[in-house]
Length: 382
Image 1 (cartoon, rainbow, N blue to C red):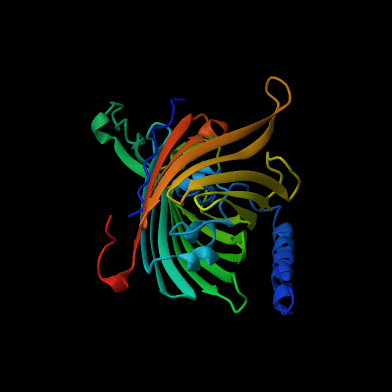
Image 2: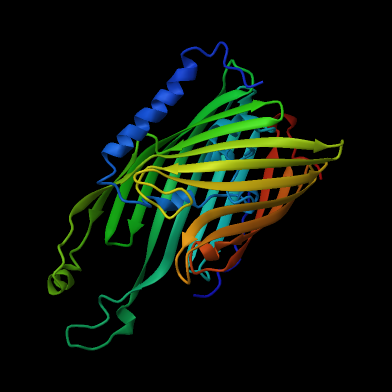
């Protein structure tokens, strides 16, 4: 397969004392969710709604999506909703566009987030992943057996997710919680449609030079209800001996992402940040570093160096797998990138190795993030 076209992105003291019952609720909720996932593991497919696992933002791509603990800015609505309270400006806008597989598929993201006060933030975002202009050749041959190219129409296969995000600081210094309510719409041309609904919950904690994050995606399990429109396909289904579908339910089991990050300062101008994330999936054995059934754990690492928080150099390692073609060996996906940030405007670049995820090659990712303070009434001056 041809190398993927370059992606273009646009984005307009850890104390336990006094926590009491609050310190117990989350682990209990965690175990309960895992138990629920185990019950339905036999009926839930792997990689359901996988378009929501791609990621957003060149910074995160450069660090191999290792940003659940250290994320800030508009992309918090995706990576860790609880971190949305770290926004430095009251209004934050974001748009993204990317193309994969030589432009065959389009991946888009748009978001807006507000910070009305120091203790809360909210936002709304949209993700779309789709393949457009697919030829429909069902009517290529007319009733007389003639080939009629003028009867070819096109259709799209697309997945959509609208997400509503809210984050709130708690009384414990450095601790915040957040969540997403997401509505999912999946369209397979004129042949299949689905509606889905899901909930994400997140926790973010910052103490001194440390940051911790937990992202629980599809915590209640996400259910897609499919309806199939097969009037034009009945003859083909009967000829091939296939069962004509009428409706179906698809379940997405919970995924937990745990992250820890630490900042290092080298004098007044230089600094670094390192982070490790563990992705815990509950939908059965996956080809990751620590695989099991129903739980698999996928670790990934990221590092970021900066000069006066103006110029950034980033790298990451992820997608660690065991391969057996040509002998047993371990493969991994290295990423890297750079960034510039100045007065609320950040320009980031990432070189990502998608070759280990698919037949696509390296992709170039560009991001522009922008935020402003509406109370000043003016856009920031550059």
